[in-house]
Every structure is written in C-alpha cells, then in structure tokens.
Length: 210
Image (cartoon, rainbow, N blue to C red; front, side, top):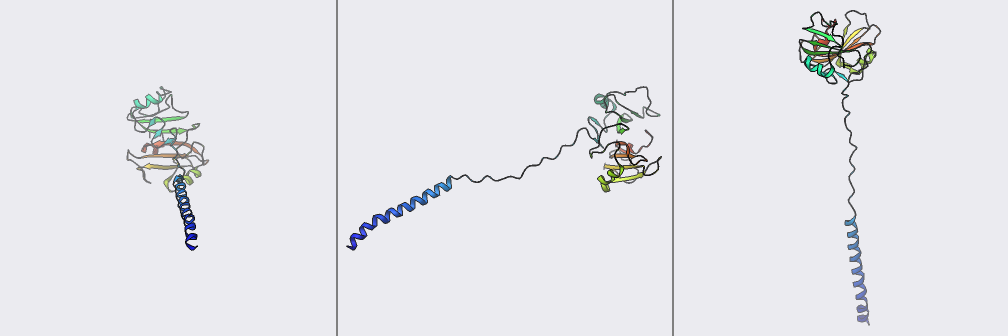
C-alpha cells in the first residue's frame, strides 16, 4: 500500500518541480526582456553668446581696434563730415564719424590705425556689461568692483570722474603699452556717464587727439 502511494505521489512531485522551474525560467525571461532604465542627463546650459553689437575694449561690431583706416572705411564708410578737422594734424591723429557708424559714435585714427571708438551724447550703443551713455557712475563702480580705476575729471568737479576698466595691459599709472585695451567711462558733474571711450591707451586722452 505504501509503495502504491509513493508511486502515485512521484508524478505529482515531478509536475510541481517542473512547474516551479518553468515559473523561474519565465520570471527570468521577463526580467531580461525589461528595458534598462535610461539614465537621466542633467540639463545642458549653453553660455550666452557675446553681443556682436556691444562696445568692448577691442571694438564695436565690424570696427576693430588696430585695423587700418582703409579697413575701417570698408566696413563703416568715410568721414560723414570730410571738411571738419578732428585734430590739429589729421595725418597723425584724426577723429570723425563714419557714414555707416551708429549715431554719435566717432573713431580716432592715429598714424593710419584705429585706436579708439567713442560713444557720446545721444549714442545708444552699450558696452559688453550693458552700460551706455546716461548711466549712473556709481552703478558702474558697483558692477566692476575692484577692476575699475577712478581718476578725478580734468575739468569738472566731483562727482565727475573718469572710470577706467582695462581688459588687458592696464595699470593705475599712465598706460603706454600699445597692446593694452580698455574702456573709459567719462562721468560728468551730474554723476552720469556722458561718453564711453574704448580702445588702446588713447582712451586716456582728454582733449580729442591730445
């Protein structure tokens, strides 16, 4: 009787074992078929491109400090007032407004080379830090911090002053290195910027070409 019971039980045990193996195999297959989770990458941030129309120590738009007068004329045109004399010796130093330059923007040509660009009066151009004519001088000091070098204005009382920011080659002394580049914010007696000069050491000149 016991032998008969064992014989009857064996098929059931084998069936249970086979079923268990089948379930394990199916479960493993299902796990293998599940796609691996896609890694989440952090959002990519693209640095803001520099504004090509901003006034920098290296120039404004296509007008670049160091280019020849002929190269400047190709991009900005000739003097809009050819009969006006911008300097005592135009062959050595001349200032003028090119016909295609932005309003109230003039250039300085020294010995045939563009050395300075000036935004004055009603000019609407901005520097690469977002400052233009009419800005508060104190705001410029706060924005640049220790990078700004202030000098008393030659003709007007405080708060009039000249704020120099050299991008390379500058110092607190008079700069003579022709490779130096910087900005000079000319602040009037009302504390507002009345002109911005960009370029080489010629930005230190206070009376045009002298």
